[in-house]
Image (tube, rainbow over all chains, first blue to last red; front, side, top):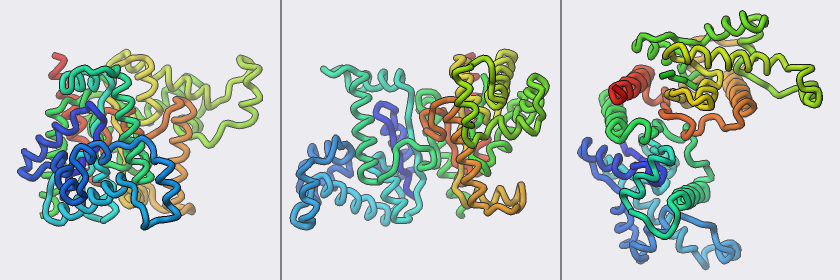
Length: 200
Length: 200
């Protein structure tokens, strides 16, 4: 079973996912996917990091290219496609934890068993975490949160046609600001272990 | 602290809430609120049961009555208002578990500390539960689920102006079909106990 972790920026989803993978003794994929997609696509890791989860809006050029489908592929779509194939391939090889990248949607569509988790938090906790982890920059912290949320939401909507952060899309949704990281890790690992026991 | 449980029809939220209250040794309110509101409003428990959580749409008569505010109060609004006051009053007296009735929204607005949980499940689990609990009737099971969902969603939207089933409105969201009732009860009680420990 694959554990997919979708998360708000600054909610600690990356750290929670890493701890879950460690506790369960299975691989953890976040940046590792970027390297894999870079090798397969030829695009640089920096480009994939930027395009593989965030989207502002599709360009006019992309829309104009639709009638000539096959002649031109938007690099962002190419990255999404290779990323998708990489995730599916990995899921066929064994269990792992993956953070973001529409992993939940991609695996659900392929009918690959997965446990989908969403991690979020109130703005106060997120602001504190972002400042602690990445430090200040020129952009106001509130704007940074809004911008990343909007870009991830748009990316998810564009490639899945579903809304981000709707309970029904996940099996477990955790407010990491309220529950704290440690409890989130415990709830996820206990859920997974419970399911393994049940399916024995 | 008050524990509010919002739930989809057929997700087992009532049963989960009851078990949580029992484990924590605190009162459980669902039908009990109906009796209290009935006493205060003069409306029958049956009327309150029907109007206190479900709404189809506000009548034209209600809309026409807005210019004469004070002269006429829609019975549904009266029920909501008394229900709201009852919940706030109870929250001032001590901790409890409450199911539905916009409890989460009402207490958040009053800045009363509460732990908000959302329980949902996939349609297959919900159908099985509804048939087991309430049996068949003339209406097709899929339609029954859709109807109740729509009425609860509309009621919540009307009185809170917020969307139902959005992760951010809750601290913990649990798919009871996937996780099973027992695990849901455990996660809620552990979260509450953890918070009690932390605040000691």
